[in-house]
Image 1: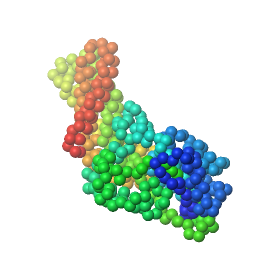
Image 2: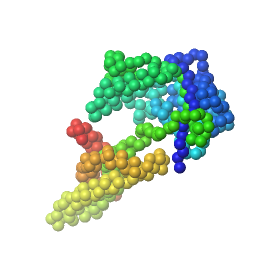
Image 3: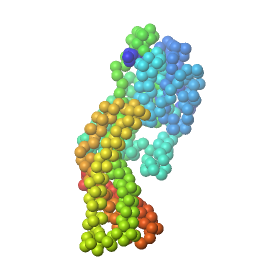
Image 4: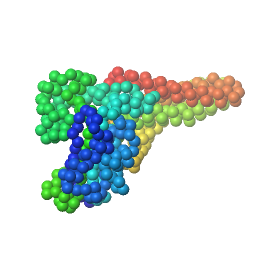
Length: 420
């Protein structure tokens, strides 16, 4: 059963743009010392440590080990947490669950950054794969601005709505936190008048790049009541990370793209090759000539049935692929990422409309027509020798796969133009 957890100690350095007096380890040490002093504890009372920062900014790996001189975590369990810009909330969650689970009674949580020694934009811009993922060299601001623009268009949000968040945070810092980097009271009008950094993000929407550290001590209920008279009890935790939205991506990607394309590639490699080989063999053995002698059309006897069969079978295969792909994604999400099956299903149900399913299924008959026609044609043009059958069969598979890719690209452009 989950235990009640409270905050019993807090320590923070004075944040500023550049701290030339302290190293990162020394900033951590100051925050830890202040947290311990606020709770009248020593490191001997700490059972475990959680530490986190955006480690690629300072180019320091294994921060959990590197920070021991500052954290005092010698011979203590230490967990490093790094979730990009959400590290601050993530380490809080980790500390809470460490204590709430019963694994530890008192947990020291440390967050820090020394941005004066880093290049944030360069780090973000170059952390992606240079070929497949590094589309923009814009750091965080440009892509985030594009995301909020899309959010505004979809949900009717305004720049003033974002300004309210900035006003809240600035005023809280000015009123309640003497250690904050920016301690100024502002209004919505001040935010709206500040210069644009990247539309619609303005200067006062942005947080500063700071040097500083913060330490918080979490303790389970019995221990917390012994440490302080009035712990700050944690009533609940929550966050939103991309892992939950993985279900959205899987549902849409599988039904709109992956299942139709992969199903078509499989059919091209199996049935397309078989069509060419069968019809080619019939031509070499002069069976097609016999069909013509009987007054029958080879197209009606050999091509049309295969065309109709693929047009029926491929959509069914795509539907099976949709189900299998989503089920597989749910299995991996549950097994590897701790996404509850019901949460995964709810996300898919909320995002995957019938329109998306129909789009994928509608591609299948078109792909089937081209696969069948290419395969049958290559069988009909086989020369009267066995070697030609093999060459045409190989060519069929290549042509079919290329045709599927080109057709899917055309679908993408057309559906984008239609807004589907």
